[in-house]
Each structure stands twice: as C-alpha cells, then as structure tokens.
Length: 259
Image 1 (cartoon, rainbow, N blue to C red):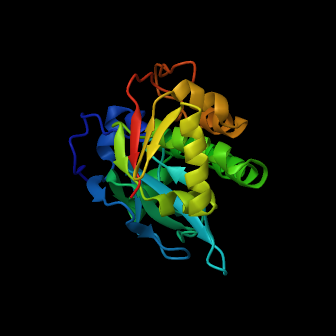
Image 2 (cartoon, rainbow, N blue to C red):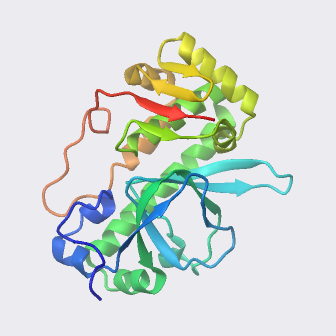
C-alpha cells in the first residue's frame, strides 16, 4: 500500500528514520496531530492504530482503584505507542494521554502486524525499542519507590527535554503531579527548590531549564539508565552519533508552560 507521506523526507521519529528507504516507503503511515491531554488509548481497550510520535510526547498512565495516577512510561520521537499489537493480543495495558501536544505518524494495526511478521529491519527496530521500553518501565518503578520527588522531577524534565525539538510546550501543574505520582503542592515545592539552586526558572505557569548540566547532576541514576537504553535502535548502516550525555547538544533552554 502506498505511503501517505513523502518517504524520502525526514519523519522526525528515530525508529522510522533508522529504516532503509525502501522499507520505510512500504509502511502505511499517515500524519496525525494530538492536543495536550488528548486520550489516545483507554486501558483494556482494543488498539486500532500504532503511533510513532514526531513532535508529541505520550504518557502511559496507570490509575488505581482509589483514583491515584502515575506514569509508567513516556513515548516520544524515540519510540512507538502500541507495542501490544506485536507483543500481545492488541489490548492496551494502560491509558495513553498526550503529555505534550504535537504530531505523530499513525499506522493501522493490521498493517503493522503484517509488516512485523515479515521480519527484516522493521521487526528488529520494534523489538530493540521494546527492550528500551521495558527498561524505562522498570526504572520508573524503582525511581517512584526509592527516590524523592525532586529527583523524579529532574528525571522527568530531562526525559521530556530529550524528546522535543522545540524549547517551549504547554503543561499543567496537575498533569506533572499525575506523572510523578505526587501531590500538586509537592511539585510546586520541588520546582521552587530547583529554582533556588539555579537550574530552572520557575514562576506561576512556567518552568524554564537554564542549566541542563546542573539538572543532570541533581537527578538520580535512573535518568542515565533510561537514556542509555533509549537512544534509538541500532541504525541500519552507519551508527548515529550522539553526545557524551546521550543526546544532541543544544544551547537553548526548555520552557514548560504550566497553567
């Protein structure tokens, strides 16, 4: 089936962009847009599409019977949402919500399953990403259990910053607290302390990363573990070059608008 995009173009998703041009051209992809807070999957619902984020970031959330919510993983331009389509029965094990609004490449479930079954680079890329996702989920569980909220906030800010091309995006304070499994008031206190340390600027509605290296020094080891596994799949052909910190060097800060 012809691709719905110009397959010679840069898609913005690292999994797709690591594929040989011919294999990418074969995939049935269509660009879609997500708004902040948009629900993409409900827990235990049938998955009709897989999504390869390009400028959006998707949170995988679990909500307890008491109503408490925490993020188990996030998916950005390093991955794909919908691993249940090639690992299980196509039922989502979590709720998926657009944490940062933006675009993604959408692929029908049946098309993804057929292309995965053919093997080749596409299958290898998805399996390698699955390993990175499992690492992220496991490390998030460790982090939420053992590390203070301030370190979890540092980790989360860094992971978000790694997965966006721009330097500014919208985010509600309540949403951040849900991601970290903490109270909104606790997020305010943690962000205020990070501002006192000079690594971010914080005011009502905005967080700006002003010292990324400082933020990396303050975060726990979980960030390094997750980032080391989420650099993207081994590229077919020449390997991709990354900075010593595991991401492209950037001089600009990152602003989060938290209303």
